[in-house]
Image (tube, rainbow, N blue to C red; front, side, top):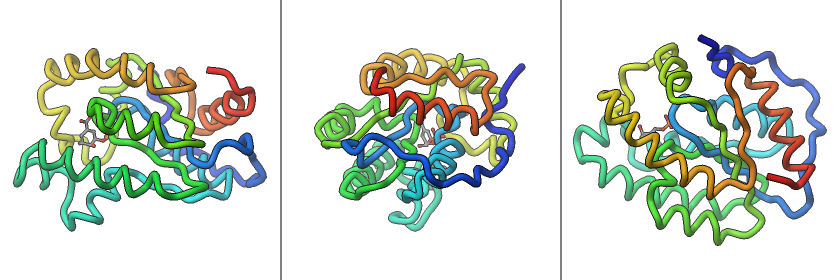
Length: 195
Ligand code: S3P
């Protein structure tokens, strides 16, 4: 099965990519394994912008890992920390932010994203089976609390997909594409100004 996006991408050396002047923040959304972190880091590098991974930001603020937060304090506490970290990151300009896969399930996060001006949300899409396969190949594959039960994860994917789609100005199909190719498509779509 093709899981291309999570293979180590070749480095992009050309850093003169641009996006329309009205865009100050690019937010990548999608389920676990969609490549948000890999694509986001490359995209930020290409633009010369800062990159933030929301999970890493939560871990930095909390001083413990995401699995630890789930195990010690529960998912609700994690969602609170996630909402706080997202609000804080959205205060910055010239940033690429990779959301956690569950962030758009929270109404408050969706409203915040919709109401933050100059913010382009991009959905990195792939079929559920491809996403699971990519997650399995990643280091720390067993540590994702939401993937512990595949049937539950599949149900969550179905619940979330309409939120990802509605929130995003652009949906990028990533199945079979490398991260570099996905970055190219994201830039192309943002500059074409269509969804
Ligand atoms: C979650 C996805 C994870 C992380 C947490 C919960 C989810 O982020 O926020 O384990 O609910 O789908 P990634 O999508 O970056 O793996």
